[in-house]
Amino acid sequence: MTNHTPAIKLRPTKISDLDILFQFQTDKESGYLAAFMPKDPTDKSAYISKYTKLLDDPTVNNQTITIDHIIVGSVAKFVMEGQTEITYWIDRKFWGQGIATKAVKEFLTIETTRPIFGRVAFDNFGSQKVLEKCGFNKVGTDKGFANARQMEIEEFIYKLEKP
Image (tube, rainbow, N blue to C red):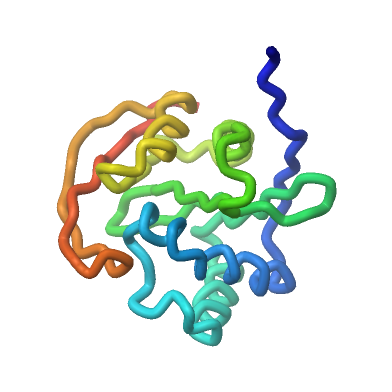
């Protein structure tokens, strides 16, 4: 049996994508695994306002992931406290198909800033596998307050050194 990953495309995120990307964030199971969410992930105006500003920020690289012109997720690079970080989100309907791994690998050919870090909740095994398949190494742990869980949890820190 062959494992077929759908053909994905990355393109710069547009304001018109934000409505759909916002809907992904409102999925409770996805939010629980992502853990580090806005205080109110259902506040659409706050989401649209935040991401509209980020689309104009030259330090941020936001890409929308599509399959056959259907938006299935996003991947982005941002800088926080002087460190370049990667984040990604796949619509739960598309989990388990290798889309995140393929999208992150492709993104890392576009975004060549290194080192680049990824942070993931200790129990988000799918996301940990994505980072590992894309060449990231686990380099540490941290603790932070996870709004989606209303508690402090451990997160793993991953690092990719070379393009």
